[in-house]
Image (cartoon, rainbow, N blue to C red; front, side):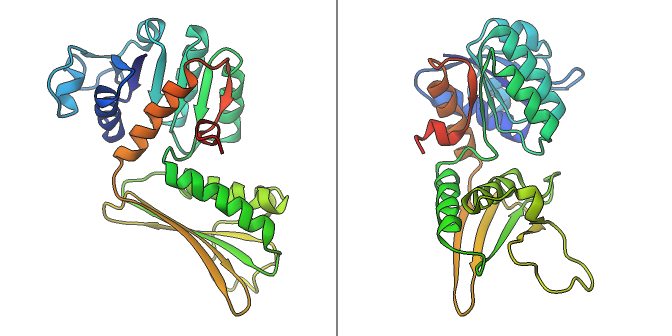
Length: 265
């Protein structure tokens, strides 16, 4: 499978290049960076700390997508939407690990999925996706007498909050209870807030250091609580999951998929 990595000079982009180079069943066909990037013209393998792969970094995604079977994308919302349109034109796989997507962005991704195979997830790790299913089941089993709080911590450079993974966990908890997350989500508390409303799903966001990603979902009842947690110690697991998603989606028909589909959950 011929794969393109966009944002190839970024932290995740370099890991994606390494994951493609080390995986069976795929090869790196192109590496894309923004116009004016100092990485343009450099070998993608060298940038990723590997031996040269004879794949120079370019700023021409249109040509790259036309000659590829799929694209791995952990960039930014506006770029991801543009890449989805190109993936739809080329009728290829588009694996989206970008976070901070809006409802309008998701609508555009779903439109692109009429022609492309879009695999989107707020987190590509096996553990997080299993955790998401557990959260849904626990939320369904426990009543409103158990308060749900989601706590996440990431490195100081992360630009969106709450994290895409935290929101994914929140959506799972809301789905388990049969409610709309937007109606019960509480993302900030400051000052004299009053008592906690029954049924709310709260989010706490921490930032600092080089933390890759820590997530916990707390079900707090009277006299007991249950916490489901996940710790990510290496970003490489997200890149490995993205490659797995691309290989899974390659023979599938056009559509909008998630990691739950990839993992059979």
